[in-house]
Image 1 (spheres, one colour):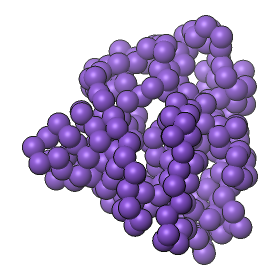
Image 2 (cartoon, rainbow, N blue to C red):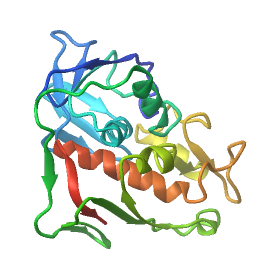
Image 3 (cartoon, rainbow, N blue to C red):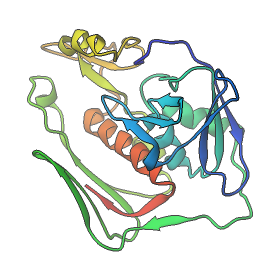
Image 4 (spheres, rainbow, N blue to C red):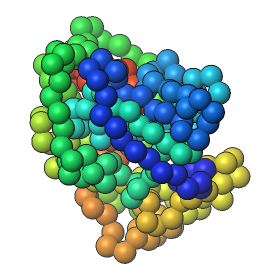
Length: 241
C-alpha cells in the first residue's frame, strides 16, 4: 500500500520460543528481523521495523491478526520490504491462517501482565496501559470532518477468545482523498486504492457498499494499536487506552 511494490509472502511454522520473525528472502543472506518493539524504525502512517540493512514495512495488520489468533511463533518470508496490504484489514490473514490450522507446542504460553499504570504523552495525544484481568482496549478517534462526524469515534471493548475475529478484524484502513497527494509526496500510499482502503471525499464514503461496521474507523485504530502492542513479544494482560 505504501511502497506500491509487488510482494509475495509465505507464513511458515516455527519452533517454540522463536517468536514472530520476518525474513527478507530478496536480500543476500536472507536477513531476519524480529517483530520486537526495539526494532521499530518508523511510524509515519504505518509501522516499520529494521535490523541492520533489512527493513520490513507495514507490519501492524498482520501482527494484529497473529495476536487475535494467539500465534506466538512464526517465520514470515517476504520477497520485498512491505507486508502485503490485502483488503486493508486483518481479516484476510485470519482466514488464511484458520484455513490451515494452528499447532499447540509443548512450551508454556507466555503473557505480559501490566502491574502498574504506564502513560506516554505527545502533545495533546496520550496512551496508557493499566492493570486489568484480561485485555481491554479503549480508543477515542479525534478528527473533525463531515463524514467522520457521522460515525462513532469512541470504542471501549473487552476482548475474549472470539471477539477480535467476530467484531474487529475486518475493519479496514481509511483516508481522505484530499490528503492522498500529500501522502504520496512523502513516499506513502503509492499503492492505495478502494480495494485496500476506505476512501472518503468531502461528503461521503467512496467505496461501494460503504462501511463494514458503523464504527469501522475507530475499530481500525484499535486493530492497528493491537498489532503495534504485539511487538512487545507477548499478548498483554491489561487495559490499553
